[in-house]
Length: 322
Image (cartoon, rainbow, N blue to C red; front, side, top):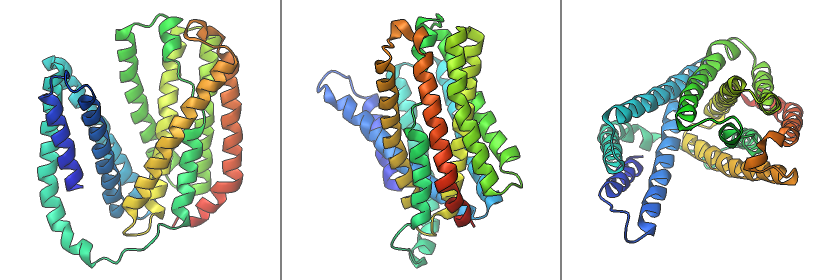
């Protein structure tokens, strides 16, 4: 983790002093390296969080605290950047400074944890339960998810400021989804009930998206964006808490890294599947008002996947959760 954080700080610092002229591929390579290093840190942080909570209640509360801190940090950084009106290179420099602070903090944390980690006996494999959680994430991320950004822009006339305001609303909806999962859905319920509730929330979003396109209402589009991020937050919390519970001690990093990798690949496939469905119905950015049918197809596909998950995966996961 220390090496990944240091690499991320170095890449952001290089971007801050880059003039973006020659060579042309250098900024792309540095940006990709930043994403790679940050992804590695993210997976290792998730593994560290997993070690602190091995019961359902503790895993849910620690995951909620971690994600809520991440959201608030994102909001704080965005507000600082907006208030100071930072230019591109200055923003890169601020990002580099943030990663330097993280690196210095990790120096102390990893020194304290290194002795205990060496004494720990690590398993040689992650186990079938980890694979089941990854399959759940693949199914959720791999289903087409309607994106109405172009519809809001081309049909409803949302300008840049409106889209920015909508992003703030989506952040609040994401936080509300995490709170709903932690305080209501996961409180005192069996994992069978929790996962069924998660999949029920997950299937609602395409129906709301189709109603927005049919009604051509700007206010309803705001509701759709909030519902979309709310459902994503609920499923995100469930899958991450599950991985935290089933990953064997010493293999937490492997489990979370595997889940993130497969989920990212499935998301790419899901977006391409959504694009192909739109193409088959002849939907273009100029004819987004005719996208009701493909969005309905995506909704029925998501419903079918949810039923298969309830019948095939959820019973095994419920039995595997301690």
